[in-house]
Image (cartoon, rainbow, N blue to C red):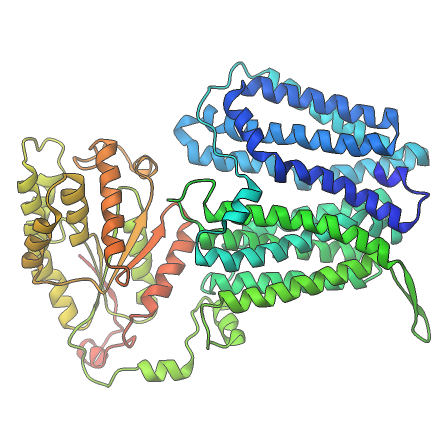
Length: 637
């Protein structure tokens, strides 16, 4: 609508009017988000959703009726404020309507709120085509506004059909400026913040001048909608693709490369004069920016941090403020630079102000991407191209000089490697232990997979007593000693024999489980339990302990019924166990790898493989094939 009202003005006025509209639509999210969250927590959410939809409908309908630039800009701000209220009410409502699946409902809320962007862009492009064919030049923008009002009417009708929304606790609403000035809280987030700022700048720069750019290329409103559709679909696909592409490749390297790729796509987009190519390059830019966002979020997620100080909140704030800076700076720059015709001998090239502004944004994004890559690179000294080539084939690249330096002498190893998987109920220890064993087998290692309690015949009897819900009256000390007895037999008959022949032992639970469950959970002296288990195991300590963390309520929901004797303990018991595991890991950080078990299995497996790779011996111990005449294989106990 703003573009239609300024169609007879010069490039500078048109660009600044469109940019000003976007600024007014982003300002509420930057300045008023905490207020919207406060209202969502205290006001009836059903009423809040209805009021927001009805008021948005009224404001949008008045825009074509009034037909004034000033009121259009004011309406953009008002609709954005109302949309912020609606978003916060929706985020709070879905978890309240699904209390048993709160984490999943929270993720669904995010998808419901932001997922329709691609469909909205396509719908706008179709409406623009219809308007171009059926309406006069002065009223073509009106149809899209009336369709939008109709969408708000349908939304209000759908909300009205909901009888009641329970008054459950609302998720904390971030204060972007506060979170930004407080800092990321972690060293990893500082580097990722630079990358996300650059990716957000690139995507927002395209949106800021897309209407002017498509007008220069003869695309009009329909072309504008097509560019936005390409950007929205690209972002959505990139968010989905980020955690799944090049699984063995370093996520931090991938983040920096994604930003660099987005900068290059923006540069091509700025220079080409063909609308179809612009749409495709915009989609590619969206893919790279979306992949950067999802990769960065996965890299810095800390489930223990409060919502408003969590690194992911910092990244969201950086992205939002970066987008605001882009829409403030890029349109005025496009207007100020103006259009220039370059004589190329046989022809001429029209270098427009929007092209120049996008090219400057591409250079800024490229510099930030390269700086972020250099700061985040966790594989220094490893050449990029071979690393990428190995990742394409599903492998982790090891430089030849490192492989040669790490290769042991051709003698039989006297000690293998011991890896233990720990965590609370439902954390996924068994799954990740199995995936690690399969990965080790595929690389030619002799692997013994085992578990506690019950890995031996004696252990199976002890397991039956310890986990059977019918076992009553068992004292805490007796329970501790039974676990220690199982562990003593386990070490003597399974773990030590395997390690003495040079095998890799992967165990589902070990001593730390007793320290966490019987020590912290049962509130017994942890030092005493440690001494008993040290004697039972002969002082054997894992080379690596992988700790998978998950909130107890979420982990217990993963378990099949019926629960065993330990799983049936109250929630505060499992909370103490979780805190105990965390305390043990913090006391010996070099031995632990701590992971958020709510993340996808493939991401967890990749990080575990990275850490295991650093402690591995030569893939095939010398003499193994001579002794067995077969390739080393996994053995299950």
